[in-house]
Image 1 (cartoon, rainbow over the protein chains, first blue to last red):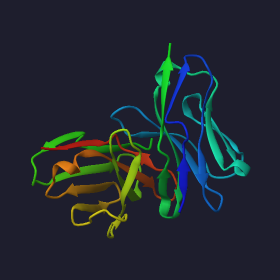
Image 2: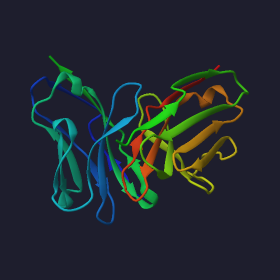
Image 3: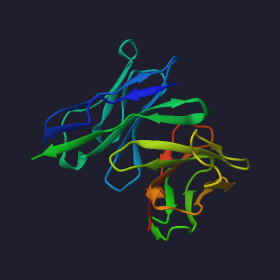
Image 4: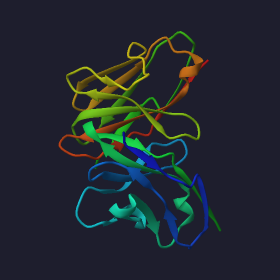
Length: 112
Length: 115
C-alpha cells in the first residue's frame, strides 16, 4: 500500500525567510503527487501537483515542489514566507481509483 | 473554477437522529466524489468513494449502513450519518474529481456535533 511521510509535525519560520516542507512517499510506479493547504476549520486547497514531465512544478501562492525519484521525495518550497502562509500543509499521493493517501500534515507557523 | 460546496457548514444534532450532508461541484461534473473524516489535529481519513449512478465503495472499517452515500447526479453527492452518536462528532470533508482528471477539489467541510 502507498504511504506518505511528512517528518515534521510543526515548523516555525520567520516572515520573509525561505521554507521547505518535506514529503517522502512509498509507491511502486511513477506517482501522482499533490500538495494541499488547509486553514483552520476549512477544506483543502490544491497548491500544486506532479504527474509527469518537468520535475520542478510551480503552484499557486508562490509555492513550488521538486520531484526526486531517487529520494522518493516531493518537497514543497517557497523562497519568502508571508504571515498568511500559516496553515497546515498536506502531501498526498494518488493511487488506484483516483484515491488520495495523505501524509500526517505539517503545521506551519510564521513569526513576525 | 473547480469549486466544491458543502452544506451545512455546521450542524448540531441529538444522539439517535440522522444528519444529511450535501457535497456539490458547482462548475464541473464529477463522476467520482470522496468522503473524508478528519479528527482534531489529524490527517484526513478516506471513508468512501462515491460513484455517480452506482453504489459507493467503502474503506475498511467504515460501516456502510451507518454512513449512507448517494451520488444521484454528476454534481451532487450526499452523506447521511444515521442514528448519530457522540463518537460520530467530527469534521467531514468531501472532494470531487472532475471527470477525466486526477485532481481532487475539496469542499469547505462540515463540522458535526452530536450531543
